[in-house]
Amino acid sequence: MSKSNRKPIDILLVEDNPGDIRLTEEALKESKIVNTLHVVMDGVQALNYLFRKGIYADARLPNLILLDLNLPKKNGREVLKEIKKDSLLRLIPVVILTTSKADEDVLKSYSLHANCYITKPVDLERFIEIVRSIENFWFRVVELPSH
Image (cartoon, rainbow, N blue to C red; front, top):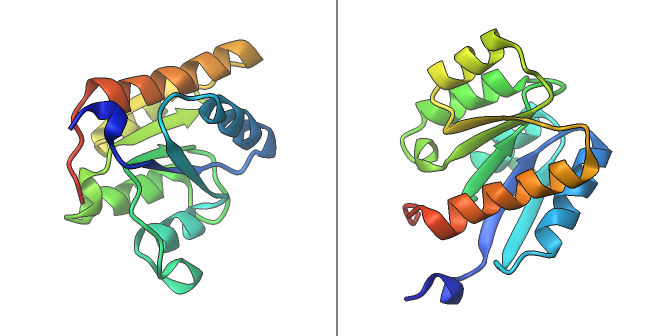
């Protein structure tokens, strides 16, 4: 099956900044890859979504997680730790997409088994370019496990 004939890609965006959510949505809308973006705005919602609890009982597991570190209720590091402890969820690639450039955040994210760490640019065009690069790499270049 060619990559262009695959079923839609599910992406979970864990982000509390409405502006960054909108930019990510815009970047993915123009994609040649059919995708469905699911958005949660805090760490507790993210874990409920991934573990299919409460209102997320029927949620489909995403093919990719875009995770901000600075989240309300549970921060991104705590969410990442929970994801990577679970035998099924740990197979889902997690891309840290955050404003932090701190070495300790980068090191901690990789030590918790993040698949990559990207610092959000402040420039609009660059942000869209980065989202498209993430999508291109994870859905056109690499092979992902099926759930």
